[in-house]
Length: 405
Image 1 (cartoon, helix red, strand yellow):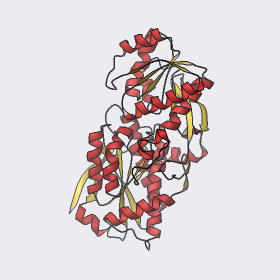
Image 2: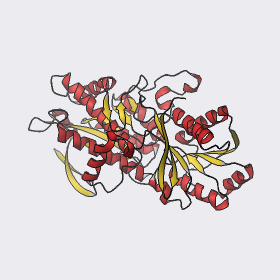
Image 3: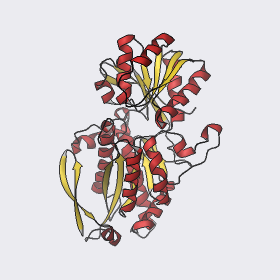
């Protein structure tokens, strides 16, 4: 039986024929072409939708280009995007939907480390490969005891093209202390896994360098009135605020700080979005770090940028476009390896997932963001980081380097 579903692509609604579970086990289309589905989990609606839509579109573009280039002969790639609304409970439900669809051989996403924590185990139990372009929580790949040096990979199916908060927080601290010459910082986080982990990493390196944390606080990421904490910051003598969190709360926090006195707010990749500037009339001078180098500055990304524009997506690829394309392409490359090792055809169901997962260890290619491969923990081997500052209503790159704490 064929089930008709609506899929949002490039601003238009199209009808896509999707096989039932029974159909998917039969393997492929009537012309001898197998349809292979890559799931995409991201916040397609809600406060973080700017980043989520960039993820969805970039994954879609990778599948389209693989089909156009006939990257894997006999295989047609499709993407299946699901909206997690940046909520762990929804992400867990989406994970089960991907698992229940036998045509899905891998999942790209999610955006949020907290959402990923709810998805990792079920996907792992199903041998379903997951590659996030955005998760930076160190524990996702190295376990809860990584801080003590006891690194253990919790889930064999989890990979990422974004580097860790251990690296990002340390890079941010070094940039603020050495480059921005700021020695006194007020530390704030939103109590979520991403924000709290990033703030902790920043604090560790900043104080080791000789910087002083003059105060610290936690905020609710759903709050938009931060006058109470602004009063504390003003009294502390801080020369900057480091915020571990995301732009929906970070933008009003920054604006309310500058309504009171002029100091910059710095954050991580969760702040690096055009929407941070749209939501904050006083963003000038604020700083953010993000994974990788700006794709606009990479020769390796020129084709991606041109293809994205040609495809006509109405939403920008945003901070994770290049990393998403590479995450999706890593699954495509794994499928290519699995097909080659299986006589030119991908088996169906659980066997396909097992072979794709095994192939991930062999994946190595030159991607949009640079060389793509994964270490023994599933972490990207690309540790490039960039510091940005808002200048004239846009993010401007200030420093890019491959960084290891």
